[in-house]
Amino acid sequence: MFPQRRMRRLRRTAALRRLVAETHLRVDDLVAPLFVREGIEEPHPIASLPGIVQHTRESLRKEVRELVELGIPAVILFGVPAHKDARGSGAWDPDGIVQVALRDLRDDVGNSIVLMADLCLDEYTDHGHCGVLTPDGHVDNDATLDLYAQAGLAQAAAGADVVAPSGMMDGQVAAIRDALDEDGYESVSILAYAAKYASGLYGPFRDAVDVTIVGGGDRRGYQQDYRNSREALEEIRLDIAEGADMVMVKPALAYLDVLTRARAEVDVPLAAYHVSGEYSMVKAAAANGWIDGDAVALEHLIAIKRAGADFILTYFAREFAESFAG
Ligand code: PBG
Image: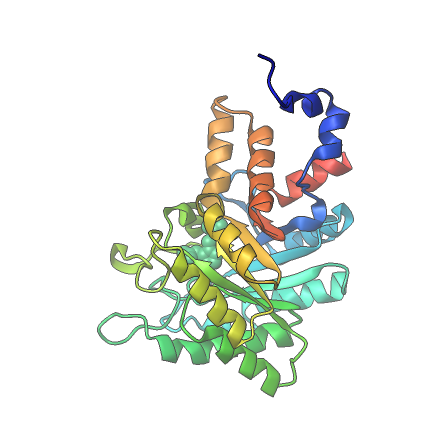
């Protein structure tokens, strides 16, 4: 018997496949994560993130100007301070590295690209946790909220369009929103890392920001347990109720089910963070000649969009935009 319906008819030529493609990845979908390090003279390569560097203030400016030319709509900044302390003061100091970098970029590129700032303490604390610690070594949720509010204000004053709290403290979005509104920054928006899992895939990022969690600890006391997905929806609903303008699921590929559920549930813009480990695995396998890195990168990014993301934070942003420009 002949098959009833011939599915292969529409796969016959590239043009037919293009015509019926359900998902498209555009440069407009991509946010480039960038690292800027205080007190260095030259950009430093990050061994576990091939092609990505810790920028100097100057090299960051050049990079962002080039990303504007390539059509990337947004960058998200992470700072590596020269000195870390128990309270992560570099995160809210007006002269902290990200604040200084935001002012540089605001002068250079104006509104031609969205300037996002990751809002957390872990890059700035000497113990590596995302919040301040109680005397017995636990992360103190409510004491941390005050510092997040200060960090948000410092980033807004320095010119951030979007602040992106990533520390998974309860109430962080409300605390930051209140502080911004009280100080006249009503127009600064919040991208909440709403459903952020305690993942093994952040390893290369921690090299990039020189973070080691004290005593070999982990973040399972505040980031989500990857056995749960209903809980992610609850996190997302809470963040929206607290005033998040956009929400994020992180990491991406192991959480496509969460992305799809979130997409069905909410109508605010939904982001996915294709994190450092996801990038590095592709790069490492490609460097060994085991996979075609470009092909797999595209397959992964498209899968994230197909699952429901509106935009993707990815270390592939520049490469992807260049492949279009070139
Ligand atoms: C916390 C933060 C992390 C990442 C983004 N923001 C690390 C963590 O939670 O340990 C990870 C991003 C990546 O792996 O690419 N400030």
